[in-house]
Length: 401
Image: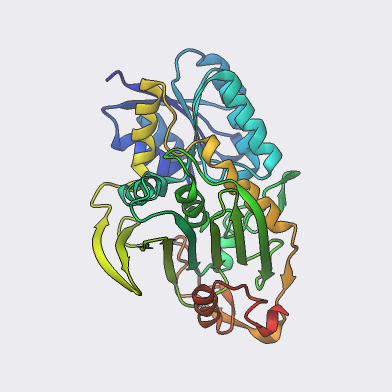
């Protein structure tokens, strides 16, 4: 295999995850260029990128122009507000793109990106890495081959605590609008977006499709001192008549990693977040009983690296990557429409302010002066909602009335 040449936008923050994958696949690719804004220049990270072989540019346009015909893939591990512009510029300059999830801030942004990919014929990968896991791919195959009959519904929930350190880590965290662009940063759009996106992807009829939403109902609540929402419920009825339910919050004390349940005509699949992001149990229904017939996990292959491995194959064989603009913009539609329902501030009498031992997002952050504002009894509330597939309002939650 001829090594793929890679350029990257930024070398700090989440770009380090992309750089780790590039280093992991050093026999398959090489980093040859990086754009670093003057105001973001952090010398140790710049030196690390140069050590990998990158020529440093101070303008994305300059990098795109100077490296024309020399770069195979451009990585865009940047903030949500810049996904559209960088992706479209890279595509129009003749490059394939790995854009960090989510697609973009708005439906219009996502459709502009899709148009650019369609018109240029270049690959636009959206880095939702869990789609690449062997577990999700096996679940998708069971669904598309109807081994348990038709998929009827799917649901998931996650409680991931986030302190003030998380929201102070950059300028756009917890914002609805940043740099003049709508970004709708929220659990559904960002930290737990993978687990909602998994539901849409598995619900798609074909191996490369996600289900298109037809009806959307949502509830958004704010406990923390942010512009956006930290606690969300969304129910989607897809065009192929599958009901999807998702519940998520950052306003919690306890961490409860995501779980999901896929209900079929003749069985069900239970998925759970575990080591290396995923394991599953498959049950066949016999009368009123569910019999365990299979279970599997992802093994030891690092999930995040699979995005790059698959993209190399997609570019080399001229096929679409597993997670691409065509099966990722459905997520953007749902996020955008969910905000049409507004955001309700939770009354302070239902909140607790807790000290922080460590920030889940980054355990190395200094949290000595940070706080975690949580909704009282939120874990019990969400567990009840998940069981009944009802919203905060529908189960009669006092602070949601």
